[in-house]
Length: 502
Image (tube, rainbow, N blue to C red; front, side, top):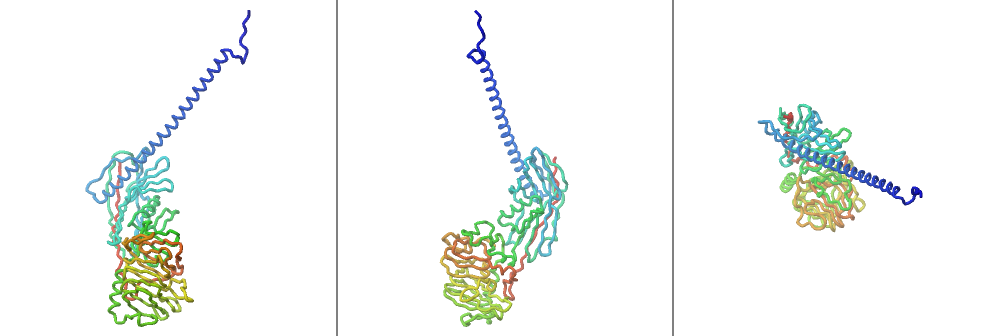
């Protein structure tokens, strides 16, 4: 008997063996591919972790470097040293990595500024410059360490040290030495009189400088940023009133809490961080003089206030005053609070050139408006803020609502250079730290207000900036009066430094 091979496709053992072998091979291949994938993922995760760890080490090292360099500029007895981590790619010291220009009064100086920079393979940058340390990735910037810049508005002083590196060289990880080679105290730039100090920083790290000055309370105010030439312009000191009235609201505080604009009443017509001179000394002097000067007039004896100076102890209740500016300026001095309840102070007549103004100076701690202060027109208000200026001390809180049916059209100036407790349990949505408050059913405002903080919490109020103020030449002081001269004492020194691997 002859036994033949199993037919192809049958259930014979050789065929099944082939299938099983192929299955095992495929299974082993799939396992190998999976293992390789896991290895690649794990390798990538390890690489990312190592990269992040390196950047964190370098950041910490740069912060320590900045602190050490600041110490070295004030203590030059012996060179400083530290262990520096520059990562795998190393760092580089740069000479002339930008310019810093300081202007104000008769001062106008420009000096080069150096930098120390680390670049990661992913494009991230960590940089030291003039005492600051920045971390940048694309357009995102973080301030890792603040520069030793100090500005004291009360003490009228600005300290702004500048560091430059004498040589451009590579820095690797390991011990480094830091020494100040020379210092230029810049004695020619030590005092600015009656002017804002403007600092212009041109630097590849300008975004970091912008971030620092925007976030740091008590520092300068960012006035402009020019991306095309990598420049940020910062101002220190008191701004001029002409600059202040370029906005509907000029707010002295930099922190966002100092502007509460729930329903967008003020909108974009504001600027924060602009300090204006406090009027306290001028108002105090005006009140004292008005009380003793025999030429001062009593509004109660005049049906219309014409050119000259008038004095009252306070305004409380329904007061009606008409003001004629056709023959000159009118000055109304108030020794205490102003609480205008359903009354009005109306400018009824102006000079042909519309240059004369009504200036109101109130020495009290409260201005509450439930009446009209405006130019009269057709039985109402004209919507023109160019004729009236109201000045109060830094301690004055302004209540424009709730429950006020009033209108104010003019310049409202109650500048303060610091937060005060203007109210005792203010109530509503506005807090005690809001100097000007305007809540439900409050007064309508047209013009420009200057205060340390503002709260506008009602969608039923009108707030309009009068564009006519843009071109007005404003003088907040009556003839014969002015603030004491504004002095800013500068402490600006340029330190030429060496940073070397040991």
